[in-house]
Amino acid sequence: MTDWDAILLHDGPAVWRTLWRLLGNRADAEECFQETFLSALQFSRAQRVRHWSALLQRLATARAVDRLRVRYRVREALGEESGHSDVDAASSCRPGPVELAAASELSERLRQALARLSQEQAEIFSLHALSGWSYEEIGRQLGMSSSNVGVTLHRARHRLGELLSEFVGDRQTSGGMS
Image (cartoon, rainbow, N blue to C red; front, top):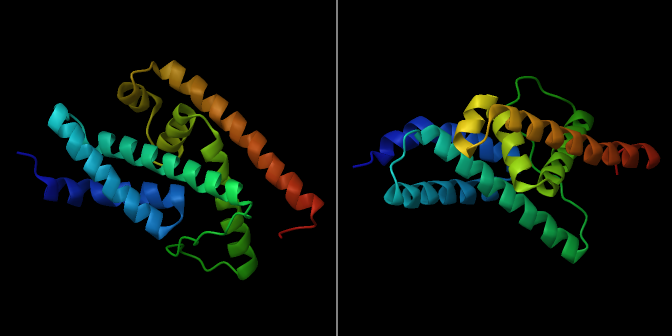
């Protein structure tokens, strides 16, 4: 019998941090948190889980990237400008309003850029950059060689750089933040 209380206590905080970093929106993070654990339950009924932390991080990342894609598709369809997300209040120093606005805008642009990557690139980038997984850990979970993980991560970083440089160019031509 699976001890869900122990799994939630042990892995829940890391899953929450991953979702919050990716989504920057409490309601979306809460919903994806629930979806992650529901998916883990369904997965565990079909096969034995050897590494709960890895499974939960992978499921959380996939749910968050899916949510980002939906978020930006809806905004594009409605012709809306992207909104600014909450800024992580757990920061140790208190930045001023300008720094908070710039960080919020950059976080939002990173989320938009992640939503434009392929599922595999977004997942590998998030697991490595946000969750601190090694190439080997990612490779084991995704059934890839660590060199293939490295190549995919390199391509993801390159594409993110292109997408974010569009943002920097937009800011410079508009004279700063909108």
